View 1: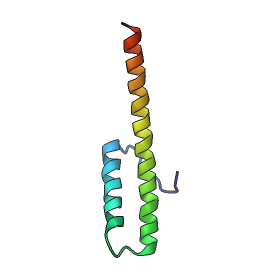
View 2 (view 1 turned 90 degrees about the horizontal axis):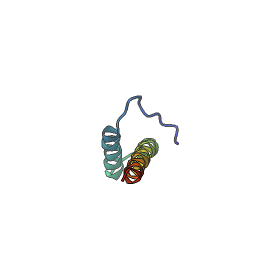
View 3 (view 1 turned 180 degrees about the horizontal axis):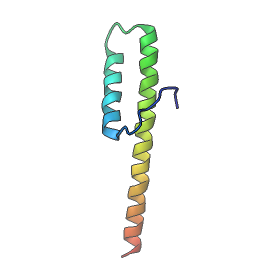
Length: 72
């Protein structure tokens, strides 16, 4: 993961909102290079956080489905 720190207790939805804000800022014109690099680093950190949350949710759903099928 990048050097950017994710705040303790951050939830998926808030991380997505922050990622969208970073993306919108990067897409705007006139972002100085140093700011663009810092924003990119933040974006990578939020993306990694969201990806891990989605992967965890997918694993949980798989376990639930498999245990449901085993109980049939």
